[in-house]
Length: 431
Ligand SMILES: Cc1cc2nc3c(=O)[nH]c(=O)nc-3n(C[C@H](O)[C@H](O)[C@H](O)COP(=O)(O)OP(=O)(O)OC[C@H]3O[C@@H](n4cnc5c(N)ncnc54)[C@H](O)[C@@H]3O)c2cc1C
Image (cartoon, rainbow, N blue to C red; front, top):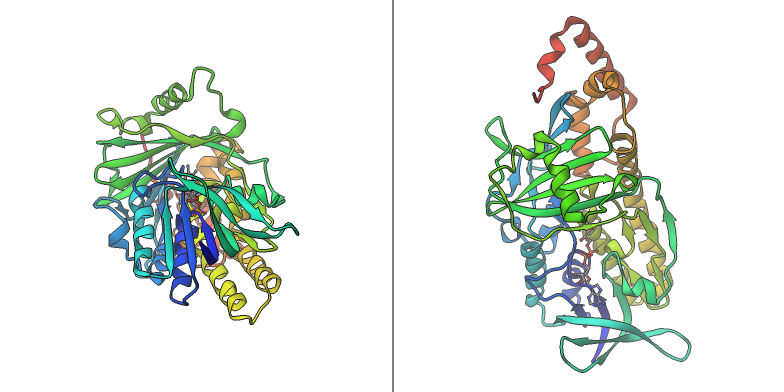
């Protein structure tokens, strides 16, 4: 089999890239080792309007990949038992909500979308084991097999590694890690639960983010059909599970009553998944005949829920450059240089913001006075929250998303409110 492009990985990065390139007539093979509806990707995602728009661009509407009961007005952010605040989704985009995704449903929608294109060959359940190289060491194709079958070779002019955080393409082509921040890595585990008590406020449903202000954080994400993803996250150096991760997970949940009260009549219905020490890094994006996209290229903590958006965005930028290469307007190196520069430019400031938030909220343990004072003044300030929700939905540039003027005004309002004691109206004590 011979193709213009072989894409390894059929999830957000790979499947959206294939969809963007399909209409151009490129002959594409997309290979995915998972079978549809048995996705093994470790992910328990929130999905913002930014991602919804990119999905619409490739012809996949939100009703196809979301389930009833998965649309939320935003997130309630609880700072231990000190205060809580509500991050409402911005209204400007016309989509003032956020989804909890079921990855099986989402991934299937992406995969099924490709059935429209006769020039896209979908190889489902096909695991790539190696990259084929010619005598000069240049990539010429891949070697792999369908479950239980003989190995076979697929030839192509270029290979795209859309194969996730443990990318085989990155390993085989020896892509270097070009940037890494490891001081604020976290460990995260989650499972899906049935019959979790809803989190309602102002007649709407919300995602619950409970920060213990002690290096631990909990996120409850309704994903539809009465299932809720329940995540426990902590600083990597606070993770200690000598008696097994399952026990650690349940014990942590039980020791935070604001979280556990919602689980008392609920039942854990999935196995536990997760990642220890989630990396925050960029890899070398490309080499002769190969390129990385999505998590294979750039990984970051899930704290701000940006991974799928970044993967879809990377695919969009890469598609544009691959077309220029295919048309002969740009050489491979020129096209890939352009891709590398643009995706880095469009993701790096957000990456730094996520790292800063991890540092502030999980790796610093502020005193009660700071939490009840400056932190509450900021996090309950309407303008600050609006900016924050626009950051998450990428409606404003991450760099300088909270200008000094917004912070100073929020602080002044908080101080005045504290003096007059009227600020209590702004906060919502949990207990
Ligand atoms: C706990 C957790 C929570 C998260 N929460 C969020 C969130 O709230 N919002 C958000 O947007 N993102 C979230 N993410 C991140 C998000 O899941 C990833 O960023 C996203 O899945 C990346 O998409 P991708 O297409 O690059 O890679 P993946 O989704 O990992 O897909 C890669 C695919 O490549 C396939 N593959 C790998 N190797 C081979 C091979 N050799 N042969 C064939 N196929 C292969 C795999 O089977 C896989 O299906 C979270 C991640 C974690 C771990």
